[in-house]
Length: 556
Image (cartoon, rainbow, N blue to C red; front, side):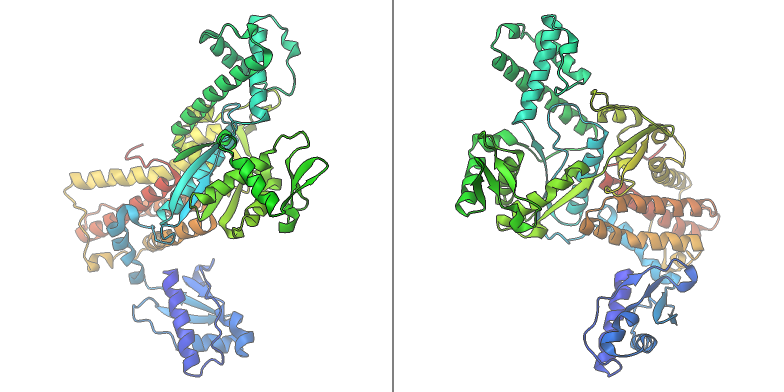
């Protein structure tokens, strides 16, 4: 509806200019808003005030010219009015909202979908946690955000691939191997636990891995050379942890099209090739025995080291090569989902991508803020330093996948999130996922009862639909008509929380309606229209939950 009003206003402005009512053909973008006060109409625009300087006319005079040249052939407008300094308010008749029901039922699972992406290739890389420990709740939020962004983009016509970058090379893997070997020595050679270094991984899972490795038949590590023993522990531990990560993500409803190994970039020589290419172009230069990338040429605050003076490459070097590999695979746009603690890394990565000839808009980083884990309102004590934290698997096992995913997405990812484990388990309206899923289940129950009473779900007549005039019915129709716009904005802005917020708003509108009106009544025509309405609500709830990776239950 908003787009239709926008088109009407733009066409009116063009006609007003052609007929001499406006002085300039330079027209701004038409912005249509929904007033917060119901008496101000269903929509409004400040276009007349925006145009005032260019037209050299008073805003109210421009507003009158626009209204005077509106041609509403579809009957979308009940009335228009000029308010304040030049706002134009639009009032929509109830009959103009009703066609959305046929649109929902006709499109069904595709209602809200679009061809915005036109099959352009987009890659979303997310989670990408080091295989040095199990996923924690912060990874869970990143997984929910990345997976949902990918689902929304695919729904809007993009060719989306999801990727997990495995950091299986470098210092952290060696540290993992050393940690496991030290626990192995502690268990089977009697080394005292107080000798365990602070820079090693502290979690209890490290001791478990050491015990597993021994029980798997590697009882000979104490006789091996230390470097060989550490390497063996590293390979075993990284493989086991990565396997656990895959299982946890699968339980969370997250799958990837590709798991990409950082080590493969070194094995194939791609890191060396990328460094050589940038050295040849002069963007990588030697200084103090190291190699530096001229990221300051592209807006970074200082140049960055890619090869240290000891000859070892930095993470930046492999990341440059990795992102170059992404674009060579044909992705027009690359979206990385990182933890908020990586914000300082964005400028240098952006610089490297621009230096390779790509546009700034072809690379986007989503930074996901921390999760504050609560239980009945009280913080859950965690210590990363001591290796004591609540894993993603713990959360899934306690509250379920649906609640975890939904709650992770209830706020914009650039805001910290309070996740209350007890609230997530409640079967009350205080629990947002229960509040939304209950609507789908309640309408399924209504549908079953209708079938038992012999009431079919055939499309009602226009005369029957015209009886949907109660304020709560009009609100539901308005909310249903907004869904495609919400999905489109979510895709444009990469903001999945818009879907979650919309579903809670739609659920609230349904609850308000259901509390005041009987769907199955003694009036057959009205029953048919109301059943058609609530079934449309059910379809949109289901569609939105699908985008979030959350189930739509038939009963609760």
